[in-house]
Image 1 (cartoon, rainbow, N blue to C red):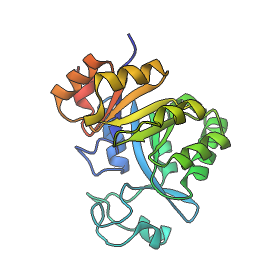
Image 2 (image 1 turned 90 degrees about the vertical axis):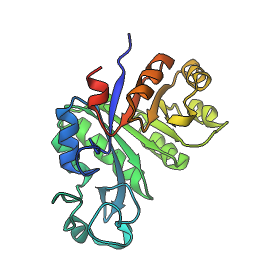
Image 3 (image 1 turned 60 degrees about the vertical axis):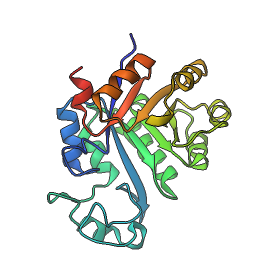
Image 4 (image 1 turned 120 degrees about the horizontal axis):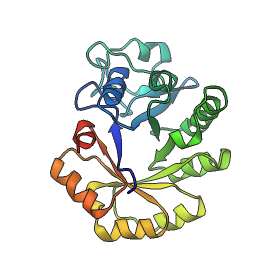
Length: 230
């Protein structure tokens, strides 16, 4: 039987402030085999945060891209945690789990590819330990053109007819689908096309049971222990 993968959504964000090193470490402690984080590009670095604005997850307001990197790093992202850069997340994980990098803003794709290549060539990671996902198809195309070895995942939150054409043309590895769209028919057709199906964001044990019966390959969850303890 294929492994059912547990993606810790923004780290173990049900326990610790999302997209922080404490959330990442908690996810690993709970047994997640993948960590999902979100990135924006700021001054040549990938900073790990989900929203384009700071209001919800930090002690400041305004747009992420309007602030300096040093200023962003000075903010409190919850429980005294600071906003990490992606390099810090990779160093913290240190190959104990895979990393799903969701591209949230412009100019993130090239930086993500460069960092992945560095960690594969110099830090003993391998390409199978990385995935790059996005709702933005153009960013995924650029990732594949820059390095065809990197796995890409297509994010879907609305019914889309053309994702399969894109997946075939650009050799996508997976489709990441919103839970309400994860029907038996969708899952079966994606598998027929050679795609892994990962569902987000699943925090109800009954939903996890149902999705496993339907044959999904894994879920994104704020509570990794719901999957690992099964």
